[in-house]
Image (cartoon, rainbow, N blue to C red):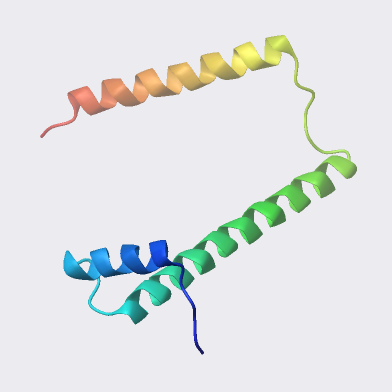
Length: 93
């Protein structure tokens, strides 16, 4: 496979090699593909979670969100956070 980089991309890769970040030009392509794969896996996980949530809602699951329920949720989160902080402060070091 042959890949044509723009002049800016070539300079970017060259700089990475000069600074020791990469050893070979091929390393840049491998890293780019690795990051792309990771991003695509994350995207697929998000889409699957959205599909699952939509199916759950379509099946009548879920809860109605109101101002009051949001306040209650915020209070619960604050309580859990304060409890965690208190536990961390009293934990032996």
